[in-house]
Image (cartoon, rainbow, N blue to C red; front, side, top):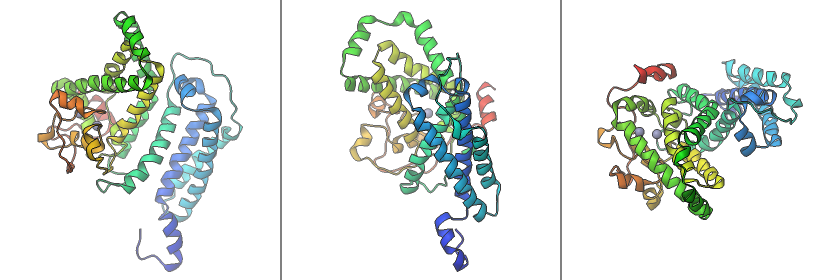
Length: 370
Ligand SMILES: [Zn+2]
Ligand SMILES: [Zn+2]
């Protein structure tokens, strides 16, 4: 904010700043609206059946689309007036305008023909908008470290966020193939009947416990086996931790870890309701533990994994290398002998202390194969 503003401009700067943030929001919503209208036009290829069935209704996403277009136009105009740099405003307004031209106000609900494979563009747009709505205000209000929303390397992490959401159905197909076709023989009916008969709350807790145990053991291997570490080093290469930083994961690691976690859950045979709740818990907690939020949590930090706990896992202090593998329950690390949590301190810096991977999505994609 410029402190030497002319008095007549003070009011507008107080409300809308210099038109930079409004320009970014207009661009985000304009591009989201454009992707959204493409999802309505080509749902067979750009949306996933699981998301359509479980995540949203037609009315909800249609109203969201209309709201995004309205706000993109409004903030685009505000940014155009206030910001000497017009590119963001034009990008927001233009993409919203194209969304309107492509029929955003004429979308209608229709049956979607099943396809073998599709991209999760719907999942990407919804996850991005709602993650930003939740985590940006939280990180502004309770920042552990001073950090801009658009901090260094945010573009790299946004690409990871985009790719991982886009490929959601490939991950689902892969884990289905492993547990149904390759490991179908390992399903024991009596175990599955016992698991399904447990109260749902108990099943959810068991899901979290089983999943976190397999996650932590796999995670430990990533740290201890040198060729696996090259994949996992990408995740640790973030030097600025916030809600978006957790997305930085090599697709090979995502694929292997998801398989190692989800396949045991299927084999034990928990109910669909328990698995759905677990998916929500891991979705929220995997983002939250990276967030730049200074909450202490008191004694709860010894029972559930908090941002402080996982931030120590990302510390570039060699004393903390190979500790705190759990994502849900610190008790797993206590059992593995890898629990290490100072009561109130936080790491001063993050990253890989020895031979860090290169910057940038493409270089990081090929780095583990070299
Ligand atoms: Zn790690
Ligand atoms: Zn992490």
